[in-house]
Each structure stands twice: as C-alpha cells, then as structure tokens.
Length: 209
Image (cartoon, rainbow, N blue to C red; front, side, top):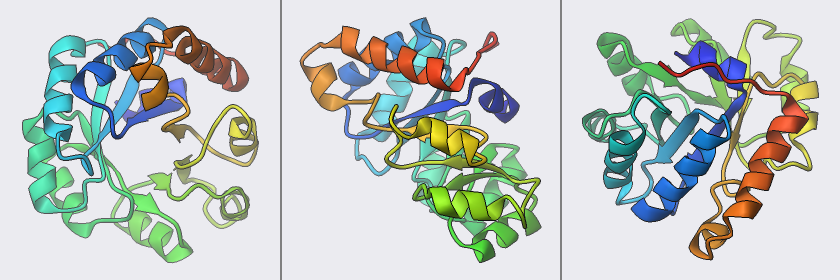
C-alpha cells in the first residue's frame, strides 16, 4: 500500500479540524486525485474524525493515523480504522506492534542515529520531521536506499526544492488542510492549492482499491 504513496507523492495531514471540515476536505482531495490522508491523533476527537472518514471514503482514500507513538494510541488508531500509522519519532513499541499486526508504519526520524535505528528494524520509508532541506540533501550520500517523506512547513513555495533534494513524497498540513479556508467554505481556493501542488511535483494516483 505504501508503495502507492511513492506514486502519488502527497500525504495530507489533518490536525485541528472537526468532522465536518475533515469530510469537506476529503471530498476535495478525493475529487482531485489525492488519496493519502493522515488524521493526527494529537487531537482528542481524532478517533471520531477517522471513523467518519472511514465511513465516507473507505475504498476511495488511504486513511492513516499520525502522532502514534504509544501503545494505547496505536490500538485506538486501529479501532478507528487506520490503514497505516505514523509517528513523529521512531517508536520501538509501535514498530513491534505494527510488525506483529502487519500494519504499515512510517516512523519519524531526524538524526542519523534515528535513520540507522529505523533501518535496523526493517523500515526504509521514513518520515523526516521536522522537514529540513539541508539534512535531506546530506542524507542522500550515507542513506541512498532510504525513501524520505519530509513533514512540516511544506507549501507550493518550497515543495519543488524538497523533491530536488531527494524527497520521495511529502506530508502537507495546513497549506491544504487549512481550517480557516474550510470554516469559511473557500473550497475553490483549496482546490487551487491541491492542483498547484500536484502540478509542481507531477504526482499521479492510480485507483485506490
């Protein structure tokens, strides 16, 4: 499944949105060829949001749970229907549980020690958090087989730089999952942002199921 992320190149992060705003956003994403969405479990209502999205978009979107680094949150995410989980750093516990349950896991890394530890556990698709262009460039030498997915502060202004610096995909938050635009129902602006990002990176999405 995560190989499809490398084809689509975009994962949109939902944080701080209510159920209605999240559903409105996912309609826009689904209709414009973005199929990977993460619901951040740093929000108290994240399980409710993920369940609602699962009910409305199962088979249309790959729905994941982010900020999952504790056992309790891991089980909450799976119970809400997560297809995959991510964490801001490398969680040995989540790595163990995800392997046992055959759930796709994208661990977070920042230091070279983090990257080596993740590789030692068998993970080579890694979340680079926070996103850092210089770090991404420097890791291309020692870690040529790692697929890095930078998260944090990525917009239309810098997304091309991340890909030219070695990113395999990117996580995009409030530039697309923008609460103000959703609350004010400025959906046309969101569509324009999605299309602009896709045009810049040349991402393509095949059918989800």
